[in-house]
Image (cartoon, rainbow, N blue to C red; front, side, top):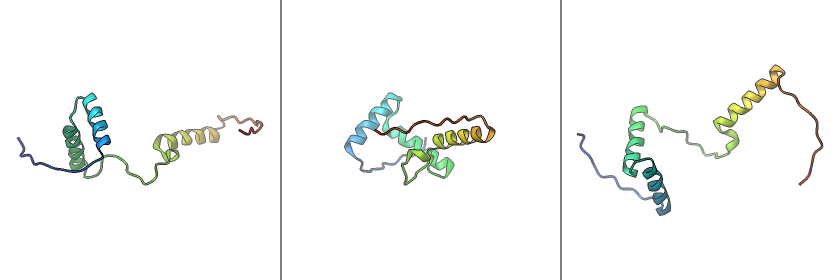
Amino acid sequence: MAQTTMVNFRMDTEAKKEVEEICSKMGLTMTSAINVFLSKVRMERRIPFEITADADPFYSESNIRHLERIMADIESGKAHFAEHELTEE
């Protein structure tokens, strides 16, 4: 078995409680979840998810794929447009 070491860090108390509950529902401890994360970092030599400064959901991967499908429909003639009256709220 690999030798272990203690790592200490600070985090928001509420976030810790919430993450512990989520991990518990997955059958994990927060320590095991962090070890999974660190193992992925070691294997992939990168953070295993995207980190961005923009949290704008417009630029999410799923939205971009959706917009690309719409553009493909427009270009192929599958999309049909109809005029409508603008409404004000």
